[in-house]
Structure formats: structure tokens, C-alpha cells
Image (tube, rainbow, N blue to C red; front, side):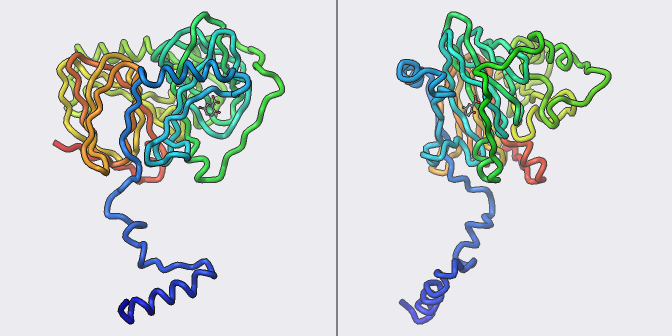
Length: 348
Ligand code: GTQ
């Protein structure tokens, strides 16, 4: 060791008991020239996942598990219950006759229905029936329980801001005394009030910064995408992509998560783009290919209906589809935007 480096090593060693460390050894990593997420792109094929959901259904009841969920962990973040540094993803299964008991927490949740029909989620006294492709919201700190009174198993994607709330050490949770909350309003009330480009004349938004709509039915988003496919220009990067909104603000449905629905027409060969918000994708219909520039080199994911994949921050994504497909996705974009750090680059 040169004299200068041994002087430095001694300095570091002597200050260590005081919990101090020199910035100059880590500065480049702390303030990188561009985002360099440790997360890697990852694909979860539904045909591989489904047997494990089935086995989970045999191994534990929804009631005992509270939430019977298999977490989709980023391969670079194993053990952290995180799909990106800020987001959580999991697949939840509820069998006929089961109830996932009522609780509430500060974490916001989205449910994106992957398979099966007829289960419900109840939020703040109102139930919503699930259909594949529906996007359902559980606002922060609202009581919610799930149940299945239909005849088939139902699987949905849970997207939560768990890692973000953990980062801020701001998580609270509470169990209700009842398993299922009492229904206080007819199903469809919130959609009738807020889901038709109208809103009640009086009264504040019931959930603050979160959308007053619990369920955004796939029927409606699908219709919009198909109309635009036939009657409007196709974006070279995104195909046809719409963001879900909180009708009271025009902003994202939840303060921490943005959600999107996108159609790639048959024969689509998209251009690449990257954004600071890492995103999780759920394949709603059809099949296609995602090309992602991961930290360990380019990867290619051939996806089909019900597959899931994650595109980490600032890793370029290019989408293609031979026969056409529909993709749902969510990201932490509203937080980037609130902080003024959101960045997107469209690569031509
Ligand atoms: O349904 O409330 O996947 O609290 C993780 C935590 C689902 C839920 C998850 C939760 C829930």
C-alpha cells in the first residue's frame, strides 16, 4: 500500500467507531450520472405460476393467510418483497366460498383481475364484482375485504406501494373486528357518481387524493382502445396507450401509482423508450415481445395473456406484437412528477 492510501485507510478505520465514513469513496455511486437501478427485467409466465397458485390454494386458506398471495420479487431484490425499489407486485388467489378478512393500511393497493370472474372486493361499505381486465382500487387507510361467492377461483395482480411506504417508515395497519364489512351502498354507486364524466354537485372527494372510482371496468377501457385503433394515429412507441385518471383531479388514480392500458395493433414494431419510473406489466389479451436493455445486457421476453413482467427505471423498452395485444401497467410515476424528477426519453 502506498503511504497515502495507508494514511486514508487508517483515517477510515479510526473514524468508523463514530459511525462516520468519507463521501469521496462513494460519491460517484450516490450521485450517478444517470439512474443505474440494481433491478433487473424479469418475466413471470402464467403457465409456470399457475401450478404454484393452485398448490397455495391447497396449502392455506385465504382466512388463515389473511391474503393468499405469491409475491413477484425482482430477482435482484430477493427477500425484500419488492418488484422494483418502490413497488410491490403479487398474485392473489381466492377460492369459491372464501373470505380474505377486513383490514386497512396506509399502503395504497390496486387489483388487476387476471383470471376468473365473480369474486368481489369491498371498500368502505361498497362491493365491486371482479371481471378479467378490471382495474380496482383500494385507497390508503380504507377498510377492505375480499370474497368469492362465485363458482370459480379468481386470481388478480396486487400492485402496492409497500416498499415506498417502508422507505418512509410511514406504515400503519389495523384489523377489523368483523371478517367482512357491512354493505352500506348498492354496488355501482361510486361508478354511477364518478364514472360517467359527471360528479355529485355537493360534497368533497371521499378519498382525498385517491380516485372516488373503485373499479374501472375493462369493458370500457377496451372499447376506448379499440375505437382509437381504428380511428386515430398509432403512436410509434406506445401503440395506443391511455392512462387511468382520478376524475376529480385529472391526475393519477392513486397518489403513489399511475396505471395504464395499452393496445399494440397486429404487426406493431415499436420504437424504444425509457423512463425514470419502473413499471410492472400484466398481459391482458394476446401476445407479443418486450425487448429491454437491462443492466446485464439486452433481454427478450416473449409474453402471452396473463404473463407479467417488470421494466426497471431507465432501462429502455421496445414492444412488438405480431397478432396484437393489450397490456396493463403501473408505475410510481406520480411520485416522480410530484418531486419534479420524472424523465422520459423516446429513442428513435
Ligand atoms: O389485499 O390488502 O398483496 O394488504 C399485500 C398486502 C394484498 C390486501 C397484498 C395487502 C393486500
